[in-house]
Image 1: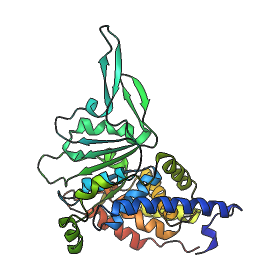
Image 2 (image 1 turned 90 degrees about the vertical axis):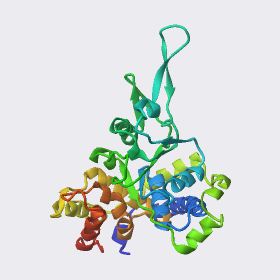
Image 3 (image 1 turned 30 degrees about the vertical axis):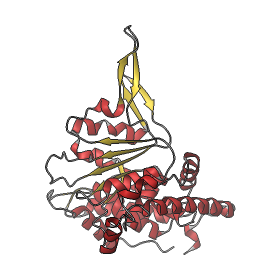
Image 4 (image 1 turned 60 degrees about the vertical axis):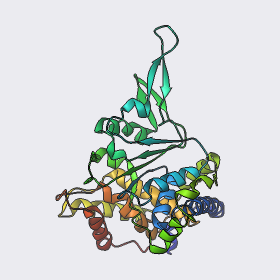
Length: 328
């Protein structure tokens, strides 16, 4: 790889050591989750990239393919507080963010935190919650804080939301709005397991039967340190211009009504930096961008034909083919 994609700083040695430590942390988490979820290596690695980059993750697929299991295995592999929320049509915003309750016999009120006040929150079947409750997550996912009764309260650091949803065509679902979708750094679709992987699930070697045995392989301190390393991963101007060109390609595509946002570009760069650190590098190369582009941008592309399933991924794949990657 051309040296111009690397930083000119003298402290490359210390940067490389830090990236190597982050790669080790990521490998432990990936291995732990992989011991539960059969196959799905790409989905697991994208989930870990979200965890390291500070982005939130949406897992979308049909029922029964391991969406919730992936989210729970990732949460179990990381030390810290954890809550699971089940999406239902009657779930209220206060059930997620928290409510004000009477304190004693007087008129004073005290705040009771909701399950969102955790390091890792799994929101299962998010699109079964009503739009008002979905909107209650916007501030949390953007600012790591929630406002209740006029007071803004910060969420624990680190904070990661892992949401699952069934396809919007299924009964009893409320499609997520563009603003809500844009808050997720990546969307992954695990898909069905291969035959040999299904055998592992059916025989109990993997799957939910082994979830209870999962122990944390890292703690909050290591995770925060890894996030600092990822934040410092170097991004050359050529890489940034490549990302901008990809964003613009989605906006100019003839089938697209609304292309990827600047927030999408920020998420894409964050995931690429995480991928670089996971590979033990302290700088981003084009392949890091390519590997996360579909997960980072597909859900942000609004097509003219709203009923076209998978159109976002197809369009992003076309843009990747059309936009040349930098070589220097």
